[in-house]
Image (cartoon, rainbow, N blue to C red; front, top):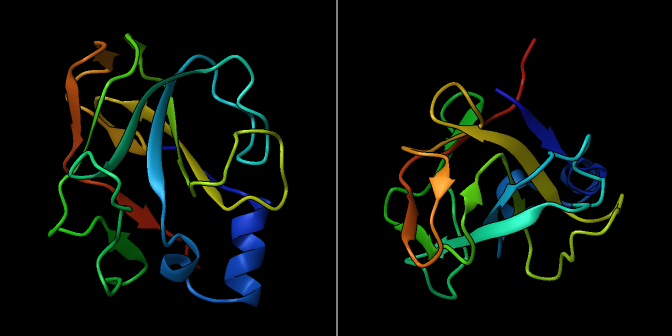
Length: 147
């Protein structure tokens, strides 16, 4: 299961607040193509398949108000979804703020993870996405390592 946080998110969590407060306003973008080596890297030639938001609209995604142990989960009150903008095979995703252009950056606040049907950062029922279909994300959890 591969999750990478950007230098910008790591610094923000150390300097200015919690994970949740720094990710306020985020969307989840799912791509086809080669996953960048780091969350700081440019998207390169990856193709955006879908942008996931609250109820598929303009609403930002949220996590539960409190973590359990070292894990915080998708807010159960939200319905994370979006309409696929392109067809392709989902290979990775990024949680980003609206201002993120996908260019190389050590200041953007991002989480990047692999996508699959099992054992990945983001698990979908199928990685084959079809343009115009609605994509939902029923579960996502962020776990920070402990000693």
